[in-house]
Image (cartoon, rainbow, N blue to C red; front, side, top):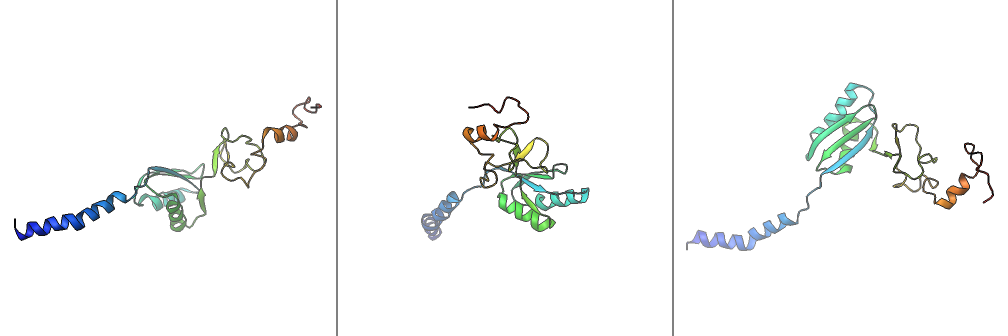
Length: 160
C-alpha cells in the first residue's frame, strides 16, 4: 500500500462521502405543466412568446394557442420563473392561467366566476381565489334564497 492509495482512501472517507451525501439531499424538480395567459395579436407575438421560454433549462415542450391567448410549458421548471421570464423577454402582461372548465365550479354563472374574456367553456377559478366570488362558493341555503325569484321558472316564488 503506497502513499497514493493511503491518500485516496483518506479522501474517500472524509471528503468523498460528504459530496456524495450532498448530491443525494438535492431535491429534484417535478415534471409540471405550466399554463400562462399572454395576449398575442399576430404571428410575430406568437413567435416571440414561444422563443422566450424555449431556451429555459428544464423545458421539454412549448405549445402556443393564440386563439385562447394561452402558452403551455411542459418540463422540470418553476412556474414563477417561467412567468417572470415571459414578462421580461416579451414585455407583455402575463399571468398564470386563471380559468378552469365551467363543470368544475359549483356556480359558474355567479358574478365573480363568469368572465366575458374567458375562452368558451371556461370560467374564472374562484375556488382558489375566495375573495373574488362569495356567491360562487355559496352553500345550498344561500342558493335557495338567491334563486327564489327566478324569471326562468314561473313556480319559483313558492312559500317554503
